[in-house]
Image 1 (cartoon, rainbow, N blue to C red):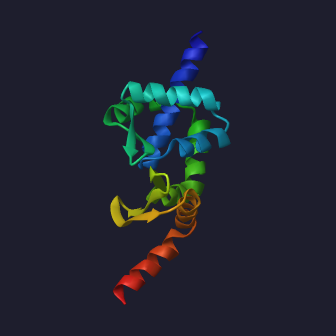
Image 2 (image 1 turned 90 degrees about the vertical axis):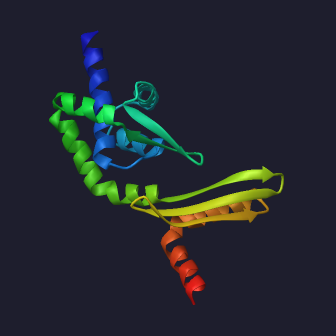
Image 3 (image 1 turned 135 degrees about the vertical axis):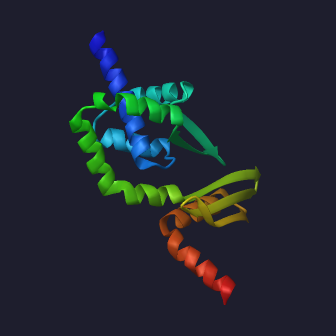
Length: 174
């Protein structure tokens, strides 16, 4: 019983450590990827821990136009600073190395968003956005006539936002 409680506390501290280290609001998918690629916690337990951390106000779930992101709260950072020494050095080293190798991709994905909403049967609003250091570089809303067009625009923006951004800026300036 005691061993389960220690493991539970360490796993929640690990999640707080990751969010504190990244210093950006990140999606459930990113947290899940980090945890599963390093074999720390199984998927279902991870989702339970995230829910519990949100309900205890150690992390917050930020809803930005349907894009949910998790971020450590001041309360969570305080708890982490008090109990960080309970995390094993091997887990800290694993996370630090993982983040060192993947942080640029995580930041890139956090900064570029693409989503769409259905207005009515043949009317979709696509929202394409690029952020840099929490400043909006571009935020475009486009009305398209099909689900396929909406999905295609989102995919193109996510895979090639930098080049598309430059083309749009050049078209508007020249």
